[in-house]
Image (cartoon, rainbow over all chains, first blue to last red; front, side, top):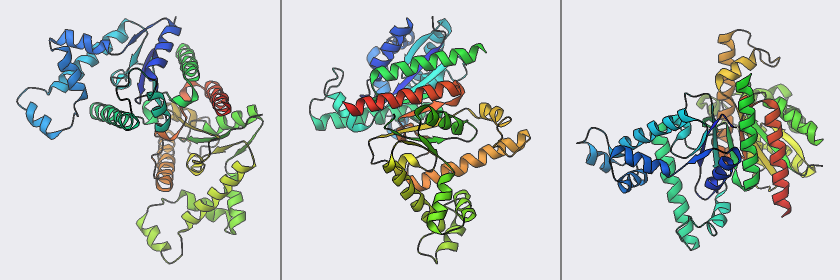
Length: 202
Length: 202
């Protein structure tokens, strides 16, 4: 039984979600992804749609800041704080895989966390997008734009809330080019979990 | 017999040089490190000391630029071009491990290159520094300064010559936290080599 919490950040269309699933299954632990949004929504009393929308909004837009100045904290910040609390609580409960949501940053004070980042060259991701049922666009131009926009949003969200730089190797224990293959990525993460647990036990 | 060229970039005091040695030995291929300087020096007619000194100089110093404005190209740039040519030639000759020297960037047009970056938390590196015979400083303060200065120089050199960002995962196929252990790092690199060769063969 694994003792490690694994956080996985990933570029869009790298298959990072499938790798996360495989890792969770191999270790017999839970994977937390969009469920987090649902849980955050339930805890906050905000609607699920409002929470989901706040994530997609560019967090450093001036207009958005002006709009929310009347409240104590902008909606996006409230949601981030709520999700962070939930991530911390899940980590307290035991080993799990946390996909996205700045998990690496939120859990930065814990020693039992393996932080993974998955990326791939954009040409490779465009190929994968053609067969990924989660991708909305259907033509080359649409896929290109969907990838660019999603990455831009993820980077903006991460950089805003963590003050780190999304995709900078220094924030992770392991960063892998998904083009090496899904199986290889899973194997490496499992090897890293084993190595982490060995060094923790020493 | 490996068919892949492996470039390894690394922060100071991560043991990246020892990992590179182990990988080269495991695959039965050559490792190129400071030899590159020697070769570059021999090819250029510049003294070995001058070449080595040019690498340590901060490449974007205004004073240095003014000093070299009289020549066709600054000394540092000449050395970089020479070393790049040598790296390309070595890659042509066959599989090898290339440590540092922006190898990932120099060989960016080749498909048969696995690009690795090795980093570690600074506290972990300070501990390693105490037992690493290559480290010059002997007290805590000196070690801290030596690590900071060497990293600063490496980042400045890489960022100047490649226009990329040193340590950004996107520049590499694999970035590993050396704190996972030397053996794990070597194993992961060998796994990645095997995966790379498998996808190349498909």
